[in-house]
Length: 182
Image 1 (tube, one colour):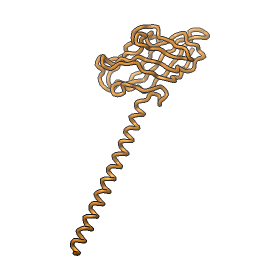
Image 2 (spheres, helix red, strand yellow; image 1 turned 180 degrees about the vertical axis):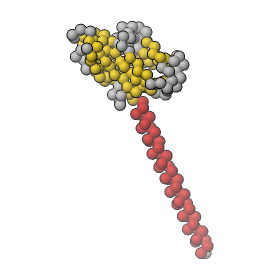
Image 3 (tube, rainbow, N blue to C red; image 1 turned 45 degrees about the horizontal axis):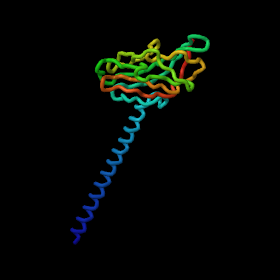
Image 4 (tube, one colour; image 1 turned 120 degrees about the vertical axis):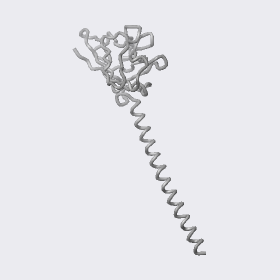
């Protein structure tokens, strides 16, 4: 009887220890998954959620987007984007295409819609693994003109992005501050 009682107690102890070990592992896995999910959500956004989501985050990482305005008169100017980005994988054609009015690119500033003055997207070379600064100044497919110099932000920028024939779409970026220069 003593042997049976000792055997039952030993079985209970091993079962409890095993359950505690498994619960500990499950808790660690859950915490790791939550951390990974949170990091993924952060990596999807651009400018700390100021601008929007990058639909091509697995191929093309966008680190920041800023808008720069250049005065063309006392009251108006041109606004272009400067995008810090990196191709994470080799892009099929080695470039990213941005903008173009044929692909529904437009900006909303102070409630007014502005379209770039060129119809086709501009191609920007993007070698894999090299952080690049994409300066769209003077690029008709992205730059917008006749913007009042009193404007402080692009409320919305509907931008066409072309990675390759299977990866292209129009995305909406919001609340991009404009920095004006002379």
